[in-house]
Structure formats: C-alpha cells, structure tokens
Length: 342
Ligand SMILES: [Zn+2]
Image 1: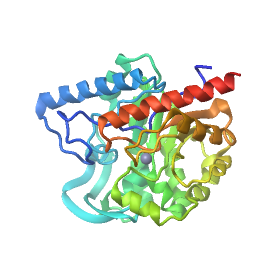
Image 2: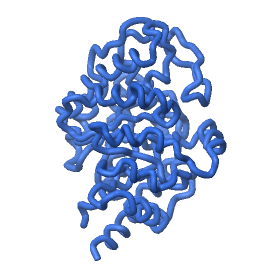
Image 3: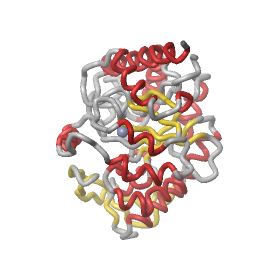
Image 4: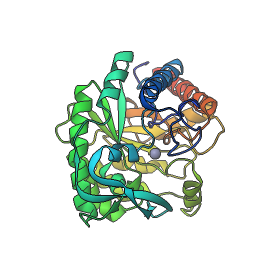
C-alpha cells in the first residue's frame, strides 16, 4: 500500500535564515553573486533532505531558488519593466506594487531548468515543479501594452509552455501551475483561463497539475476568508470546466477550510491533491486530523487518485512548524493507507 496516497506539498517551504529573511513574502536575499547561487543550491538540498526525512513521496525544490512564486518567473521575461511599478489590487484583495508590461512578452532563456536538473540529480523520487499559471501572472502585473488580460494570458501561456517542455525534458515528473486567481475571477476562468492553462500544458510528456487555493496564511487572505461565509463554494464555479480539461491533477485546499468536500465530486476522474495541512496556522496537525480529512475526501475521490498534500505553500511558516507539518502529513497518510490495506 506504500504506493497509495503519495504525499507531496503545494510547493514552497521556508528558507534558511542565512539565505533570506524568514517568515516573509518577497523576502530579500541575504547573499550576493556566486555566494547567492551556491546558497540557493545548498538550501534546495536541505529542503529536499527535510522532505525525504519526513517521508514525503513526491518531492520538490521547496521553491528555494525563487523569491516569489509569480514574480521570479516574470523577472526572466522580456517585455516587463521592473522599474515602472504600479500599485494594483491583487486578486481583488490587496494592494501591491507590481512591474509593468511595456512590450511583447517573451521567454528568451530558461528560468528554472538548471535548478530542476540539479534537483533531479539529488533524488530518485518523483519530482513536482511549480510554475505560476497564466491568469495569476496577469493578475500580478500592470499591463500597459496588450490592454487585454486574455491576450496577455495567452502570451504568458506560450512562454510557460516553452519552460514546461524543458522542465519535463530535465526529468520533472509533474508540472504544477499555481492559479489562486481561479478562485476569484470565475467568469474569466471559464471564458479563457482554462483555455490558457491548456495552452501552457500543450504537448507535455509529463503529468500536469493545477493548484487552486485560498492563499498563503497572510493577513489579507485570512481577512478575505472571513467574508466568504460558512460554506466556501468557489470551486463549484470552475470545477465542471476543469473536469473537462486536459489537466491530470487538481490541487486544492481542504484542511480547516470551509470547502464542502462534496464539491470534489465535480472533478471525478481527475487525480486530486487534497490539502490536509493548514498553512494559515502554526498549530501542527495531529496525524489523526490529517487522516480524518483524507477519509472525508475518499468519499469523493477514488483511493488510487488521492494525493495527500498541503493546503498551500509553507514559505511564511517557521521552519520547525513546516517540518512538523510535513511529518504529520506523512503519518496521517500512513494511517489511512493501513486502513485501505485491511
Ligand atoms: Zn496556494
């Protein structure tokens, strides 16, 4: 039964304090030049080691080489000016100073491909690599060129597809696109968001996933969650079209969230990464709490398609908390594996 319920994380894990300011988003690097390059690789090795010690089955780079899950990819594209900053409302929720699109966007060189090769050399386990989704990228920028969110998303999807093909060739087993914006802009998701996502995965040989969540445990997100009422039914708006899409895996938030579990029925047939670890609290789940969430999900996901996961990235958490949560995820999955074996 060890092959059942393979565990993974949504993506990011805390960085060591010698590399970047802990518990901070967009945290500045503490090293420069070659020391920074070496430091990022060392942190990646540490992050991998911690995942493996905790018994995580599908491992990642812990996003140790990037400052932010969206911005770092965008920094590598031409057509975006990081000096011309504008304040926009991200996901209709909080103001952020973001770069501007000033010309045609293009990926002139690989972004994470060397990092993925480096990770591939360190482990035999399956690797998952996260990229931002086209819609979430559009939502983290000021567009002064295309003046159309849909057109810009399409251009981003082309750049993402180039990157994804090279990541797959570097040995990545699952490429995940992070689309928290899918939980906010339902009409756009159905009009062009899922189409842009399918453009990004076109022709990929590896498996593909989309991660849709209620965000990191930062104040803007926890405040927003308080406005959503007792039943969070956002997934209901987009799951039917997602179910019909070519995406293999859907990663979503289930632990301590008010998402009615039966919504997962709407994506029956897909593999589901079930978030069984809450990233918005420092309290470490017990294995039994993790198991309880997985058992509920099993009512709506076939056991061979259930992948226990975290609700979202853990980069803003203290390292010890994140380590505890990884171990709880493993132990909770083990409990349910044993039950399935009986
Ligand atoms: Zn997330």
